[in-house]
Image (tube, rainbow over all chains, first blue to last red):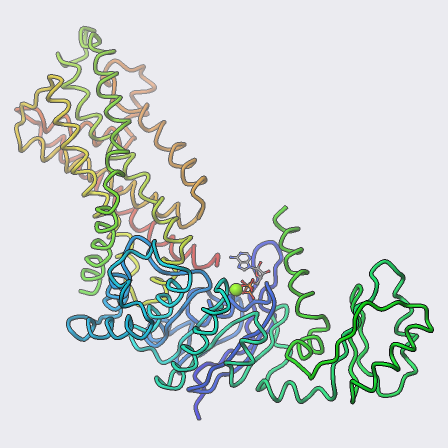
Length: 329
Length: 257
Ligand SMILES: Nc1ncnc2c1ncn2[C@@H]1O[C@H](COP(=O)(O)OP(=O)(O)OP(=O)(O)O)[C@@H](O)[C@H]1O
Ligand SMILES: [Mg+2]
């Protein structure tokens, strides 16, 4: 099967010394849902902006639907739909007016456009609100309209930048159904970015984990998880004690691997989690380290992330937020 | 062809959104009405100065206020561009195959529509206060054309600044920083012959002066058409340069994101 998206060796830096993309490459097969998963500031939106011709890379090349995003931007634009991270709907216009204008910009018109718009309003459950201004829409309704806007001209490739961020859990699940249906029925290629591990796991046939402008792991969610042998142990330690001796304390234990400590959390991997727990607790106790809680889990994408990016997902998030604050102050 | 149809769709969107907030036009009329009423009575007697060249201050002032209002109203045109930027609407358009100049052109048509409405109201108020328009209805139409010719480049530049600065506060600051001096270094309130000589030379390079000169001339019964055409020519050149700059600002914007 042909590749709908090819990104190779993309580099992009922003003023202020931010290296947003640092040699990022990946390919997406036609008709697949591909997930770009990464914490805040990883470079997901930057990648999407380059692939949709909105922004240009400093170096590197990319093709979408067989056309080069740099010197065939016009051809690329006709073939793609783009749903940005923040909304793109015009709040002073009605849902229908938004969709009609969008279609006209792509050269559609007449009854063909009217039919397409009604069909989209129906499928995204916006029929009753179609002739009200977007200002009065709920967050979920606006997001559904955003996606409908990206689909009016029947693109071959759809880019969804964090389609469910800011939605309540119920609306998020509805959106998931909608997205999988789109891929199934319309034979669309979808590139989706997200910071929800669960979302990538549920929707993406293939996914790539992005960290600091690079792809650190790539594969189907199952492949990525199966690369991790055994169960994950997460142990919360008392935060007001010296935890520096842990790795030494656990070093000699058999079957305990990939030990890492982040502030007061300890992560490790064991073939059989249930059997490992008492052994680890014993070792910690004899080293004088007290333990708050213990969980044992089957491998999750969170563990995949931890393994490839060298830090846990939530930690990557808070680090990115702190860097952002530092830069702004 | 595509440029024209896209301009039409963009204009339609702008006018529809404007029609949904008609108070906007009313709001931008507050300042000119204050100028017209306050300065109109305050400076009534300046026409008695030798060399002023007019015998009714309100007749002198009204076309000046029409031009000044058009300029400010155009200057604020970029604010809605900042709004479109913040909302992601502009990005959505830029990812579509829309003709880029059409995005600016649609805003210029909207701005011109607002200016026609504002001008008619100001001219009517001036007339109520006793201004006369010997050039008749033709003269009034030509005055409004001059106002639009001045407004187009300022609206284009305002949108260009919005694309480069991307912040409401910065655009407000820049617009005031540019437009206030241009207003006071023009013959809006005072006949040019009565200004100090350094000021007279500065004002002759000011587009506002070109528009006011042409606008006052067309209201006279025996307008000097060569003077009008030369000023209209200057304004047209200024407008073309500004629209080109504004369209280039899209590239500057896309480089920064
Ligand atoms: N226009 C810009 N100017 C300067 N820096 C930028 C700009 N856009 C993004 N950045 C920086 O580039 C880095 C990558 O940003 P990007 O928006 O691609 O991340 P992201 O993965 O989409 O994150 P998020 O999950 O927060 O949306 C961040 O450090 C960000 O602060
Ligand atoms: Mg993002």
